[in-house]
Image (tube, one colour):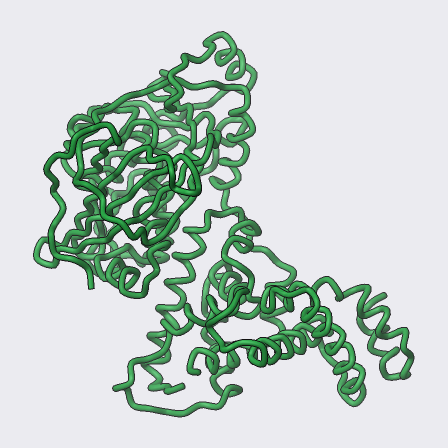
Length: 186
Length: 339
């Protein structure tokens, strides 16, 4: 079933939409939730909540890319669940490690400060990522959007973990430089 | 909270980027594909030992920083038409079986100057600018941008201070542990013979790739041989060795180097125990304990890597080993501890 058909099912308020969503994107959403939560029960709840959120927002929304639309909801719900369950940077899962790595990107405090909302900062990062070589962009998004483990990324790219880590390090360094140049304060 | 804010902002990037990363895995470069192919071929091939001197290091201190897991690579290589095996199981290979395997998969070796292009004749000189190099084509000098950066001492500091010891280990130690467990241990690089130097060259190619450095004349070259083997000219080999290893004695003047097969062996478990920096000398010393088991109960050896930084490049000054049954000796390690 293609995405447009699934979206039409949502618009027609047919519960088959949820069945088809789970059939096509259930594994995808679960992998995102599990990367963040490392807990099967919590992950399943987040995926179910994702479907409910999709049910409540389509219509009026008509996602251009259904998979990413669902993945974004799952990611946000999973992070919120994680925050509720843990003090961030503690506990298991890939998220604390990803956050620790991202701390490296934070500009020093003596830069000219410019507060940016997440959306505005997101656009800055979006432009930054589009300027990266494909492989570096892939690694960054898999690590910090999908919260894949380094090992998983290395497996996908058939590289050593060290190669992935060093590439991520360089990309974080470039992002840090960019944020510093932009005088961004988070 | 700041990192969380950044994480949230990353969640706002374009859906097309997220979608692309879900569906498209960037292509593997040819010489990576070759490694996988060669690993399969290696199933047909056994190895033999190549021993080099092993010298002493100081007594270890407790409190390991980071444990790694390495499966050393057993390698079969060809150098000037001769076949060398690099591994430490001490058994000689079955020559008949090996020759038969190779005969079934003929290896084409490119003469150094056969079919040379402009890039084949290029000499690249790194500069202190991390992303700039000087490219010499015949008698003309050009500047060019590299894809990535070299690793400078600041990288070592950053990794040590950020407690990213695993990365420190994976950049500076893992390539050696992967490819040189079987013999490339040295206090004086002039002691190294050519097969060992070839393995060092090979590992540095891996390390350069990890650093995002594209060697034009290598990256642009087509694979050779039915299994996609690569070969490297003496000029290329010498340039890499000059850059990463001090004082080596390298006499290969004609012919090429190729890897015939690579095969992972039983894993070992190195622990990066300490990273020590010497600001004045621009040196970093990594103390590594290598265990046979993940629990760290069976110590195989203690290794000391001394790395010299020059600008944004680095060289290995020495790699010293001490077996548990060997007495302690002096060390070249600087005494200033890392922050």
